[in-house]
Amino acid sequence: MYQNVATYNLFVSSQFRSSGTTSNFNFSLPRCINLQNPSNWFSVRIGSAEIPYVFKLINATNNQIQYQLIRNAISYTAAITLEPGNYNILQLLTELKNKLVTSIQQQSSWDASSILTTSYNRSTGKVTLSLVGTDSIPTTLTLLSASPVFLRCIGFSALPPTFGYTSPSLRTNTTSTQNVNVSQNTGVYIRSENLTQTVNFEAVVSQPETSDILAKVQLTSLPQSLVLWTNPTDLEVDVSNKTLDSINLYLGDAQSYELDLGNLDWSCRITINEWSEKQDSHLQDYPHSIVPEPSPELLREREKLVRKLQKLKGKLLTDAPQSENTQNQEAQG
Image 1 (cartoon, rainbow, N blue to C red):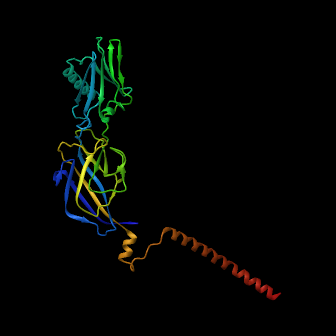
Image 2: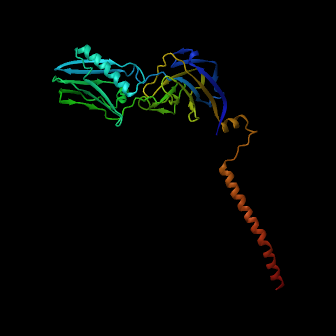
Image 3: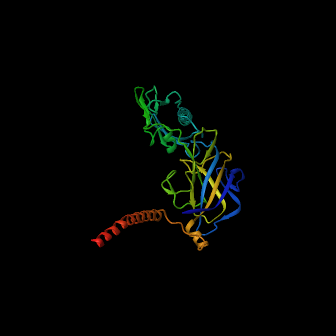
């Protein structure tokens, strides 16, 4: 049995941070919060949060793509940078094509604007990349490296193979191996670097590790809106801190540990509870005034014994007159 010894409610905005950025900040408490007993512990619960949905799926951590063009036996290797943003699949394919066409022309002076095609099949959910050249100059294009986030956007679990042509009638296209996914941001994770957890684990951004997640905020609104979230009471984490004088909070998603809010502020409500072992603490503090409450098992056993005694008592009362009459008949005979 546990007892809530104390509760502290903190209403925090990154606007009034002590240090850090809007997406990863520290704030100092007006007064230090200490455990009342060294054997007690704190739990932390994010009650609600208001977060601007301005962070991008395609961002500076995943928008670099390296490619190789081979045309007429001459090789050109370069890289393109996609504009950060939240795209639908048609917008993303247009951005990819435009950046490739511009870079290819800069590298080789070859205009591929009418030859490089990208298409999306709504029925299958897959993308096809191709070069539809009408000359007979062997031309191939390969995406050498790209982030897993971008590859999932266009439906590839690994880098796509080379696509191109050797003549107008001999073309090699490449079609994605799985459904495209440009909606990979389904939740925001509220994390803390100094609220120390020891029994919780995660495998969200990388391999399993000790978790620092305080809450997962489901994204049900569209980009460029405000995420208004209330905890449905399903998550409260125990921490091993004995004292709290400052708290760190930072935001991440399923692809990265930290989001870029573009200097926009966010806020949340935090509840910190102090807990103790109810029986131990009470008996130590008031050993003569507290009577331990019997367990439910002992109460049920007592009820069984009482019923059994009542049955025996009833049987004795019923059998007693019969025994006395038998003794009188034997005396008269």
